[in-house]
Amino acid sequence: MKKVILAALLPALVLAAHAQSPANKKDTPVAKDIAAKMPKPVAGFEWAYPVGPAGLKSPAPDTVFNAKGADPSIK
Image (cartoon, helix red, strand yellow):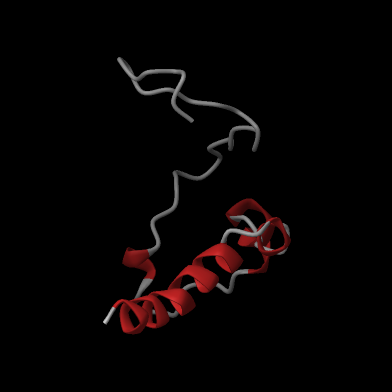
């Protein structure tokens, strides 16, 4: 019975270890890198993609904002 349980859990452990490898993390794009490549919303669905008022300046991508009362040590 122990061998059956071990045989069933082994693939899950291998997949979990592979998913956390550093090689997989460097190929994952972040939102600020792909935002310019995103298509415009389809007509009729603009409400689902709200935008700020015209002329509103965007903050620098590396700007850090903290919620009032938030623990700054948590990232």
